[in-house]
Length: 477
Image (cartoon, rainbow, N blue to C red; front, side, top):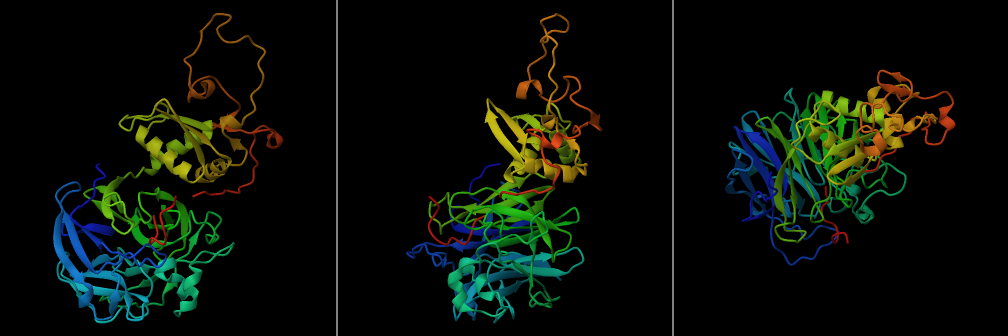
């Protein structure tokens, strides 16, 4: 799929994509040229209207319906119409948008239309109790609608830790140290989609240990750009990490959380910020995001789209089982190869699954001569053991201390001759005789092996290693 900008006649960013009336509609913010210099307030993002776009197929012609809502038509707004989102319920379409009120405080407004492309008629006041930026609406299967929002730094979320606006807290930008990071917010929407019916709630994002992500973990903590989607009964909350420029995701069993951090969706792209949406269209899943490739300037961005690969759980299980059993894995850089050499699944699934594990520090990757070489890390060992529900004494082949053989090297005494050489010193996957006692295809650790060099401990203590923000400051060097 081409990574060309969705449109080139306008600068667009922060795309929210939805399927309405059989078409794919995109609701982005509209960047415009300005002489305002980049700063931590995000003043350079001086947007004052919204356009709506649609397409009947990804990669096909894109329709621009023109201006759907203007700043001057919203009585309570002073400036900065930032990232919007849209929803459909009860035969009406709703556009949610953040903007500064007359006192310079970010609030969230709502506008309504009979058609998905607008124009939208705004309510005269912001949603009561709303604050900060980046609203993301989500209508669940039971018809209940939710609004997620929040953004630190220029998004002012740090000013609302007490439930009331504290302007003096703005300069702190965010929490620091070994304390929980600031969290996104969520509230249930009313049946008419114009107000909250519950108190605003913090949306918990935990690590694998069940503890809230710490403020100093900038590779994983929430910064802005909330998005919610549902897949196979599971809720996926994705967001930007801001100053580390990742798009990441967490999963949960309820739209109100808690959520558990899972990994990266997208590495840094060109420009300081990123903002995204995830949508299913005609049986495929797509990631909409933006970068600055059209202009080279942080505040003049362009929307792009790419397909997301969803690996079936059965195939992921085959990959995890093989990687845990062998400790190493080799895959050719051939995304069209119908089957991996050693695993009964698509080669593409193997490469992408290992990329995901690498992004979380569970696998180390080397690339040479068109082959990927993957090695399971100690953290990955613990992760896969838990994922596969295996006892502590079961370990990969690479963690079994090999017995020294006094037999002459193979081939010197005739017989079956030399075998085909495989990566990793002949391990290469299947074959090669037995290597330690097996149980269900896995190796069982020798009694007392915990103290031997190269053997992992039996303790479960996983560690993780990890977009973009609102554009506070200059691009990273």
